[in-house]
Image (tube, rainbow, N blue to C red; front, top):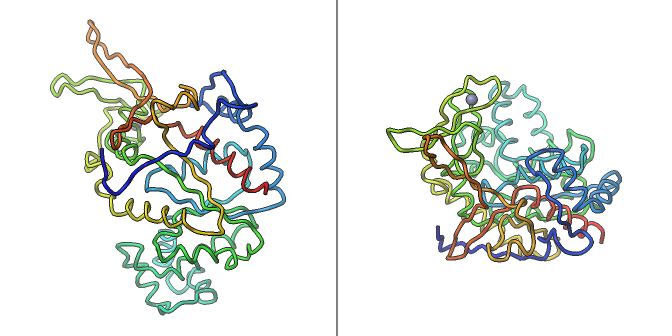
Length: 363
Ligand SMILES: [Zn+2]
């Protein structure tokens, strides 16, 4: 897939899990929590220990910027798992807006949200209009940034002072300059703030969507190519392989594609274009530290930096002589602008985050 307005390029500075004192030849099972624990402790044990100590005494604010569906939630969860404690809060602005809409719809001016907004919201749009926009919203863009800031402040005020990962703000180019002063607004004036930029070939996101399937019974999501179940079937009529749900407690059955998924990222292209522009803008900001994560490595260089088991596997299917389904596995390859890439599993991307947090906060 070639997109004229986007070019993925990799900076290998923080990618290696092979060099220096952290070099290793072990294999870890990154699909298993215990495997990940051993891997983290082997590859970034020193950095994790330092970060735990730092976070016990200090806090910071991180703004996550990424193309939609590139894994913001996955990587923050991965960091939480690696640190192994309750060290930070993840604030998703999309979730906050949805929750605010529900809260106001249920109790309107009697809601705690309305009372909080009366005391804390400052902006040009009248509060009644703000709430009307919230209820009527077809897109978040109708809600003024000042109100979004009020929602974020309320979410942060509701927990004891902690490190915050903000997901979904800034959401457009105008909001970038607000983020420069955001820490003053939430009384984190002295704390470091960092932009975390997640880079990925857009083909990775496109392919993930195109191959995803869901169980019609229990709604468990899987992926035909990247995350199959143990039970793969073959449909003689359509000559297609399919997954059977193997979730405990589910009566099982054939997993299906969602309508529209065959279009890949096409329906969210406008959003992704904006995300890409936001990342470009953030890269050019002076005075704010940036951390860059890379989802994929050029296929011909990948094994110089990481091990095969750290790469995302792709599964393919065939029938043997007895007409049984046989599953094969190899490293997933995506091609964009004529370059082949291997995509990393989430865990080694979390390692990039840990190394750079350590490097940035230690200063
Ligand atoms: Zn199911």
